[in-house]
Every structure is written in structure tokens, then in C-alpha cells.
Image 1 (spheres, rainbow, N blue to C red):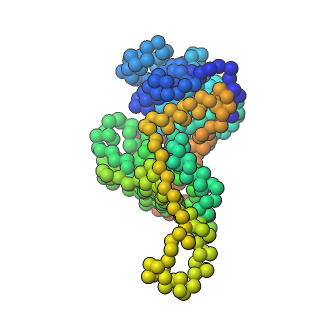
Image 2 (image 1 turned 120 degrees about the vertical axis):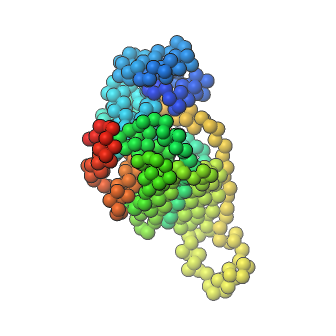
Image 3 (image 1 turned 90 degrees about the horizontal axis):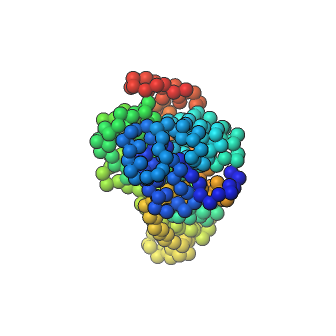
Amino acid sequence: MSEPQAQSKVRIGIVGFGNQGGAYAGFIAEGLVPSMTIGAICDIDPEKRAKAEAAHPGVQIFDDYETMLDSGAVDAVVTCVPHYLHPEMGIAALGRDIHALVEKPAGVYSKQVRELNEFAATKPDVTFAIMFNQRNNPLYQKIKQIVDAGEIGALRRSNWIITTWWRPQAYYDSSAWRATWGGEGGGVLVNQAPHQLDLWQWICGVPKSVFAKVAYGFRRDIAVEDEVTVVVDYGDGATGVFVTATHDLVGTDRFEIHGDSGKIVVEGSHTATVTRLVKPEQQISDEMDAAGVANMFRGQHDPSQYYSTEKLEFESVWGGQHAGVLENFAQNILTGAPLLAPGSDGMQGVRLANAIHLSSWLGREVSLDFDEDEFVAELNSRIEAEGKFALRE
């Protein structure tokens, strides 16, 4: 955690003025992030620099992020750039004692994220965070609180179907780096679904192993994955399933967490039904006699003697979650307020995505403690086949 600074606002440097960087600049300019001001904007694209200058007159504009870091114009940066660059830029900022908020995912592969985390650990007085804005969603905060408090007991099963990521072919054709191994590092797992991968392990815990069935270019003309089905093993008999895709025009977002003393069902990341058993399910089973079973089959038992149900619903205004993470990042710098998403937490989601890819490539179950060099070798074989991008180390 950073030491509080004697200043009223953090001067943020926005690296990349695309959709995300432009949105963040807008939130700050509109006053949605009270403890932050735009110190500078950087983009290598002249057209985007011109847009930034027009939208934010008086703000310093740079074409090189290191020049911006050395300018004295910023106290912190947010990296709104292709995924491979997040660790590099995070290290560059932290090395200059400039606070870093990296976009999701923290990187493409765990080896490079590990380097970022290890370097950040040498800078304990500089704030390092990640843009996991869904952790700022009050619904998921409440669900995590319920699970952590043991209100539904020990985890037995989790299931998340998140297919609300429909993307037409024109989306993939919009950039030469998009949906490539060398430019983007993957498909739905590294672009659309990192928030759910983070929430899944944040709430349910990190699994021990994964087995994945992944389709590459299944319904789109791309090299990377657009359809994913994963089974995970948490140990002690607990399992989980994760399904995501970019070709479901209607899409489903349903997250179930089943414990031995209750269950949570989330629909649309908006509402949740929480069922709490009066006692653990195994105890209810052991105590029910033949007469109770007969009453159950006749529909004559009273459900309230076994469980209670609560409905949860929270409004989440678009942009509010992102602005909240930016404000929390600034408050950590200014006052030492705890971070919603410490940067080091970015490792879990990347490692999980890597294990899913590796399982599908090798055709077998893969431990979350997989060989990072083996993953990079497999990734490089796909980058080499594309013939357009440099190999990774």
C-alpha cells in the first residue's frame, strides 16, 4: 500500500486513447472521479492524439509513454493498451515511482505477470492496482460476503454460463492485432471474459486443476477461441463449470454457487436468489425418515422447515463501477484506503485462462501449477504459425 500523499488530487496519465482510455478521460472530466485529474494522455496514433487534444484542451498529449512518465506531468498511469503491453508499462511506471493501474487482464501469460508482480513487490510504497471493475459491483460484493461468511456452507459446485459477448465478424476484422495469438494473445478468455474469470475465483476460490474443451475459429474467421467449456476441480469433491462464447446472439449470464448449506443463483449480473438451509443438506438427508420421503413425493412437506429464500437486486449504473475503481485507486494513493483490486490479484485470472488454453492444446487435465515455460512454448508455436508477430519469452 502506498504512503498517503500531501495533495488533493492524483494526476493520472492515460496510456491509450481508444474506447477505454477515452471513457476514463470522460469520467474524470465529468467529475465522476473526484480525487483524480487528467495529467496527460498518450497514444501512438496521430488521429487519436488529435481527438484527445480536441476533447481535453489544455491536457498534455504525448506520443511515447516513457516520455510521458519522465515529464513530471503525472503521478499515476492507467494502461489502456493491448494486453501484452500491460506488464511492460506497469514495470516502467513503478520503476519511476509512478503509481500503476493496469487494465484487465494483467498480461497474456502468467510468466510475464509474475515478473510484474515480483517487481511491484520491490516497490511497496507505490500503488499497484488492476481494473477489475466488477469487484465494485455491489451485487458481487454481497455474494462474496455471503460465501466468505459461510452462510451457504462449504462449496460443492459452481456453474457460470456467460455467453453475452456476441461479436460479429466485422469486430474481429477491425484491427490486424485483434483475435490473434501474437497481437491479442487469445480470444474470449483474454478479451471479454477476464472479469468473470476473476470473479469466479475471487468468490469460489482458485481451483486445483482444469479440463477444457475449446473451439478455435468455431463460428468466426479467427485463429483464437470463440467457444469455451471448462470443468474445474476444487478438491474435496467440489467441481465447477465455466461456459463462454462470442457467437450467441441472445446470450445467457447465469452464475450458480452450490454449498452444502445453501445456494446462490445470479441472473444477468443483476439479481440473485439466495437459499439458506436450516441445517447442512447431509444432516437433513440423514434425519428424514420414510414418512418424510413419502410426504415429499406427495408434495405435502413444508419447504420453510428446510430452507429460507432471499432475493437480492442492485442497480449498477454504466461507468459507475469503472469510475469507482479509479476513485479507489486515487484514494489509496492519497489516504491509504484499501484497494478493491490489488494489482497482484491479476495473476489468478491469467493463470486460470492459461491453464484452460493449455488443457485444450494438450488434450488433458492441467494443474493450476502448470509449467509456465511449456505454456509459452505452446503459445509461441501458434504465434509462429501466424507469421506476423514476434515470439514471446
